[in-house]
Every structure is written in structure tokens, then in C-alpha cells.
Amino acid sequence: MKLLEIMNLKVYFNTLDGLVKAVDGVSFTLNEEETLAIVGESGCGKTVTALAILGLVKRAFVEGSITFRGVELTKLSEEEFRNIRGKRISMIFQEPMASFDPLYSIGKQMMEVAMKHLNTSEEEARNLCLEMLKKVQIPLPEQRFNQYPHQMSGGMLQRIMIAMALLTNPDIVIADEPTTALDVTIQAQVLNLFKDLQGQFRMSVIFITHDFGIVAEIADKVHVMYAGKIVEKADVHELFENPLHPYTKGLLESRLKKEYKGRLLPFVRGAVPAPTSWPSGCRFHPRCPKMMEVCREKEPKEIQMNGHTVCCWLYEGDM
Ligand code: SF4
Image (cartoon, rainbow, N blue to C red; front, side, top):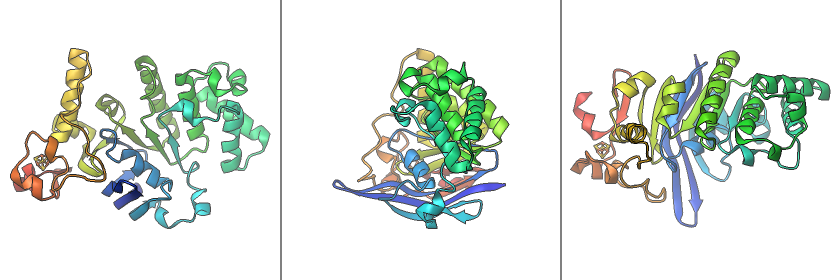
């Protein structure tokens, strides 16, 4: 059943360098208990899409529709949004150390969330927080509860952030590169924990990442984002078996080369262009090994083939 529906979302920022079209006509749906991975390099609009869902892009021009359980989120007042943000839809950020206030204990910060969103007494909030710390496998939770962020490792803080995000038993958790700042062994532990908890809490997840290894582990379906647009959508097996867009293929190839040769290679040649001046036609054309003349001039439309969607002139005749 459909939980979240985004239609033609645009998020533009006016900056001194010009108009930044960070998200430029993005549409997708998220169903109950589904995990959607949004993949792409930095600067492609993944995080801004997530922030728009949470109503956290106040100084931007926002157009399009975001409906959650039939409620249009773009029309909500700040006060109405507070009943959704952090309660029905919560977010886990990339950098655990920067996400906590260094001046307050972990327990105090967790209790504040519980009391604000669940109207619990202090004692109920404390019990709930301790229970959540146990669920995310924090050793000696009573002791950790009174400690401060600087007394925890990055992996432990990330587990506590997951615990905080799940305190209200949300319908949707948006996880923005939640394991990127962790070392590889801890990454795998946090990812496994996250998968376990997703089953227990039966939540839907939007997982933002640039790492196809994580996508293979966690996602049901995948949307590949480039230069403010979604360029390919498919379920996870279809995408790995039959990637269509040259950008997706480049990302997948780099992952394999990285794994097999043990060193980091650039994803695809070149870099994501500045968002104040996206290239004409297909925005990927300056980096694309398959570029044709039409790609410079005309933007490719979305083409659907057997439940797989791609924006690329290569498939124009295959509809
Ligand atoms: Fe490459 Fe052209 Fe397809 Fe864009 S439309 S990805 S430039 S082949």
C-alpha cells in the first residue's frame, strides 16, 4: 500500500552564484514496509529531496506535491509539520558526532524526543529510551544513558541515533548515508542491526547512499539520481542484472573495479556539474561514453520497459 507519493518535486535555491536547481522534477512512491535506495554521487539532489520531505527547506522555492498517507505535506504549517517530522517520519544523519549536542547527556537528548512526541512522563520516557538502547545493542545501557557524546565511539553514536529515530515507531525512516562515516567492520554491524530493526518495527525506509554494495544488501527498489533528476528506476534485482542508463552502468562498474583491484576508482569520468548551470539536453551528456548529437540538445523523456524506467535517448525506439 502506498505510503508516500512525490510528484514532480522541484526545490530551487536562490544563491549569489545564481539559481540552484537542486531537485528538478522528481517523482516516486514509497510503499508500506518497503526500502527504497536513492543512489548517486554527492551534489545530485538526494539529501535535498529528503529534506524537502521533512519540510526542512524553508528558504527554497518548492513546487510539486509530497503526500504522506494522503496528507499534502507541502501545504502544512510549521506547527502541523511537527506532528509528522521526527514522529511519523524520522531521519538518521550521516555524521553521528555532529548530530548530538555535546553539552547534554545521551539520555537527556533521547528523553527530550520521547517526551516531545509521545507525551510521556519522565519515568516512562527514561524506560522507553533504555529499552531502545538495549534494542540497538548498546552495552551497559544504564551507564551509557548518562554519558556524553564525546564518550562514545562513532559506531555507538550511530546506533544511538538509530534508537532515537525509532523511539516514536515511525512509518518512514530516512537514512542519509548513515554508515559512510564509519569504518568498514562497524558499517556492516550497523547495517545488519538496521535491517533487523526494520523487520521488527515494520517501517518503510528511504536509504540515501552512493554505495551500490549497501544497495544490494538493503534495498527493494532503487532510484538513481543525477543532476537533480531521477534517471533510472527499477527493483533491486532488475537493476543489478540489467542496468540501462550509462550513469548507472558507470557506478556499478566502478564498484566492481574497486572491489577487485582493491583501490578506489572514480565512479565515472569527470564530475557532477555545478547545479547553477546543468548541461543542456541530457544533463549527463558531457560525461557519457554513449553520447549522441540529440543528447546535447534535447532532454530525454522517461521510458518505461517491463517495470524498469530510464531517461536516455538510447532506448527511444524500444518503448
Ligand atoms: Fe548518454 Fe545520451 Fe543517454 Fe544521456 S541520453 S545517458 S548522453 S546516451
